[in-house]
Image 1 (cartoon, rainbow, N blue to C red):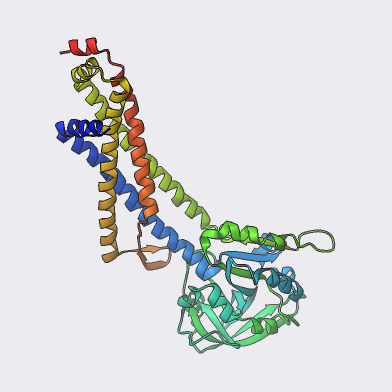
Image 2: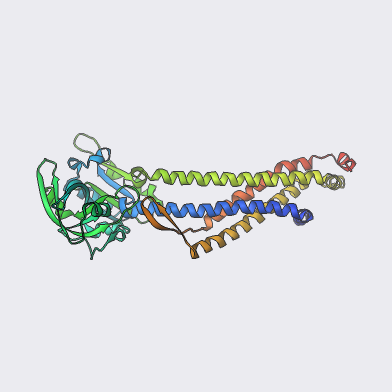
Length: 411
């Protein structure tokens, strides 16, 4: 085997210029794929983080039928105290869940005593909400401490449109599920920055203020938001919540529904598109490697017909000839994969030192933080090496089947 490797290396060095060109093509393909993967993964992670850590959480639990009619924010589909206690008993000791938060979601009229507009509101327990959505507090400017009773966090778009300032008193007018109208005065305590996706125009108030506005005798809950210890375990966490889905009412129908952020957010389609693009880029890489090595190996066979005939004539078995050409293809693939990985790592390091900023929708100044993990490097490297071997099979078999007499007559 050592002799075959030495011969393969000698044969590649014999036509150094062509070998270098082929290895360079493979290297460029590897660099392109790894850099693209790192940048797209950065954007993907940022998008998922914004959606899950500042708006939706990882999993949401609702009363059956709530999500289907969520656009109207139906108060008649809230969970009562008994239902909330039932769910809390199931999730409290779940090892996959880090924290959870209760919300009452409803629509109201927002007035600064001069003009009036509509607003979507999330009534929350601040400590639970900020723990479950760690990026939410970062979006709130000028909020001193936690959200207190009698205060409201107003979305930035509403602040600009209504000419409302921090410290101003506003009035919220809301209808409860029975149609009764009630109003509460609240002080503007913070401004909620914009975010991509759903929730960019929502305001926040304390859940006790929502109970007053909606004239609730007990704290009904529209949704329970869960944060997982590890988002990679999303499917496992969803399965662990099956006992909640098994709960039934007196009529034998399900009481609750459980949805992951992937099922609730329209931005999940963008995430899937990024994954599809990553696969497409890897297919392009495979094509580059396949064509490059196939071309080199075929040319090598035609240029070395007499050499192949000579080693076959002195008794070299066809299998050894196959191994010789496979070894050459393997060396080309291995060299391209290693060099491409090193160059990619250097480029990623430079991008961290000189970060790229971009805008997405109405958000600007976003920073890409590309990272290149061992898993990505190994997966791309293995793909390149396997394809290099596959591309070498046909020329190797062709070389092993050459008739020694005919090969020696060629020159």
